[in-house]
Length: 64
Image (cartoon, rainbow, N blue to C red):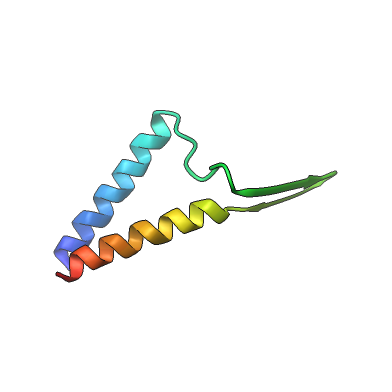
């Protein structure tokens, strides 16, 4: 449990550093945005796929 908390903390800190540097975390090419008048629909397709791949790799490494 301790290893998991440390890894999660490092991931959150890394994402925070990327945001501070101006990297558009969550607004990647391939994410779907529809704007019509007052309505905006945002679906983070590519962001979800990348997050899924990273979490799968991370959990596979932690299982060993």
